Image (cartoon, rainbow, N blue to C red):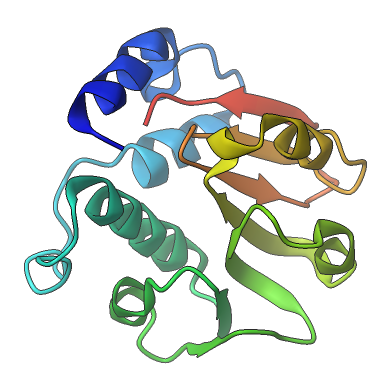
Length: 172
């Protein structure tokens, strides 16, 4: 995706910047201090030099998501192992697990089988949701999902049923 297209997406989602309109304190805090955190982390100078700007931006987001969650096992199908290992050095990065704590996956997987492995503490990140909007909307409105953050390039999905269900669009 070229820079001009990235700027267009950013301008189109400008009204969803920095947590504007989010009423839940927990969700607002997640948007401000995990998704849209702009301060550089300790590991960003050491990794990601060979990536293009979008992959580096997504890698840094995945670093912050993993750093906030601190799971024991991370399911990664996207190839961001360097960022994930820097965020959680004691975590095991695998392609499949019996229980999902944190997963980074492409959108075109069988999400029904995946969601059966999730509990209220699970976090799943789907990449390239803009490529298949109908499938993304099926995931977004699944009854097992409680909160989603649509970042256009990827989406973060939570399963905690204690939280009120909501689908947020966030300018990332």
